[in-house]
Every structure is written in C-alpha cells, then in structure tokens.
Length: 228
Ligand code: G5P
Ligand code: MG
Image (cartoon, rainbow, N blue to C red; front, top):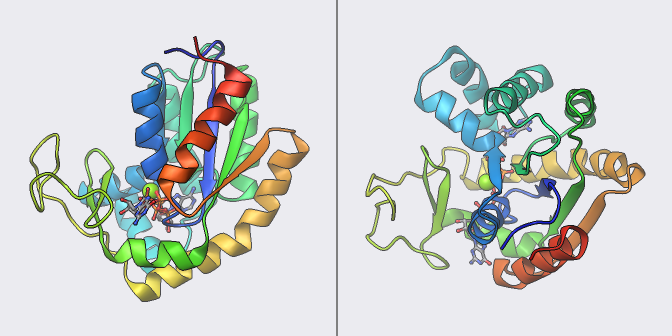
C-alpha cells in the first residue's frame, strides 16, 4: 500500500486520546510513513539525563507545557537531521505543535523547505473515556510503544513486545497531573485548531475507542492522499 502523494500529518488530541496508538497503526498501514512524537523525544531526553531533559522534566512532572522555544528547537533539529525537510517527505507529527507560537515557527521552517503540513486531524474522544485509560498505561520509553493492561496488554507482563525490555509508568500519568494536562489541552487547542482551519487542512474524527477511530482516520487519509 502506498500514498499517491507526500503526506505530512499532524495528529491533535487530548492526553490519552490515542495519538500514539493511532500513530503505530498508521505506521504499520503505510510503510513509507515515519513519525515523531514530541512527548517521546522529551522522555528520551529525560532518560538520558541531558540538560534539555533536566529542564523539561519539571514542566512535564506538573503537567505543564515545556517552553515553546525549547520544544520547537528539539523537533525542528530532528526533522532536519532526519532529512525530512523536503517536498517528497512523508511523515507524521504526534503532539507537536501544541501552541500557535509553535505552529507559526514550524510553518515557517516547513515553507522554507517547500514541505508544509498538508493534513491536521483532531482525535475527538470523550474525556470520560480517556481518564480510565491512563491508570493502566505502560510505555517502552526508547521506542514510545504504548500498552494498556486491558486494551492492548504486552505479550509478557511488564516487557516490551519487540525488545523484551522493561516497561515503565509515565511519571505524569497520575490523576492530579493528568487533570492539569487535560486543562492545558483545553486552554490551548482552540486557537491551534483555528490556525489550521484557516489553512483549510483541519479535519476531525470522533469515537469512544481507537478501534472506532482508526478506520475513520484511514478513510480520511485515503480520500485525500489515495493509496494504491
Ligand atoms: P505527550 O507525550 O504528547 P499527551 O498528554 O499529549 O502526552 P498521551 O498521554 O501520550 O498524550 P496519547 O498518545 O494521545 O496520550 O494516547 P495513547 O498513549 O495512544 O493512549 C493512551 C492509553 O490508552 C494507552 O495505554 C493505550 O494503550 C490506551 N488506549 C488507546 N486506545 C484505547 C481504547 O480504545 N480503549 C482503551 N481502553 N484503551 C485505549 O506529552 C507529555 C508532556 O510532554 C510535554 C508536556 O509537558 C506534556 O504534558 N510536551 C510538550 N510541551 C510543549 N509543547 C509540546 N509540543 C509538547 N509535547 C509534549
Ligand atoms: Mg502519546
């Protein structure tokens, strides 16, 4: 299966709405697609105890957004290093941009390389559903793979399916920090959606489960970027 033209997609959605879950499914469905998750990158920096990781961890621990300049530099540098800033590139961003300032800086960098975002999809999942997902989430930090003890448990308890390495809980998946993250999302998503609405590239898929959302997301991508 392949896309007829380059897809540069941003997945927007509340914490726990399934951005990481949908990303893994899309990567399996479209082998030419690659992805970057700003949250995964930050967790890796924290694990590596880098200066940036140390700076970011206090924001993440409180459920606050890390400063725009810090995250923008991290993601754009990676896009450049990966060679993804070119018109033929096909990729997906999970969790970045999160604010209008981030979106404006990214737009400028992407336009300079003739590789603008061409699709933004909001994953619309009721908050009542996502709250209970988080308690049961376990992650494999190096790859960003996510598990849920009920929904998609690892094959061997506590171990990543692919590497067998240990899974961990995210430090920001406590009830208190999670409610801060949700609040932060509610406060920032409106202007961000408006930003992409004006560019005519914003769509929304709604549903209570990732199984309901995935076929809708796929249909949307195929209707605009057509697979063969
Ligand atoms: P992150 O890492 O971007 P969030 O808060 O945006 O974090 P999160 O929590 O990673 O988003 P998700 O990726 O949308 O959620 O959801 P997921 O992991 O796929 O699914 C959640 C759980 O539900 C998993 O256990 C999954 O298995 C399960 N699940 C999925 N679907 C279903 C289903 O249908 N049913 C059930 N029962 N379970 C399901 O950002 C973290 C922090 O980093 C900083 C901020 O501090 C942020 O708080 N950060 C940034 N700061 C500034 N700007 C940015 N751009 C930043 N990006 C990150
Ligand atoms: Mg995620």
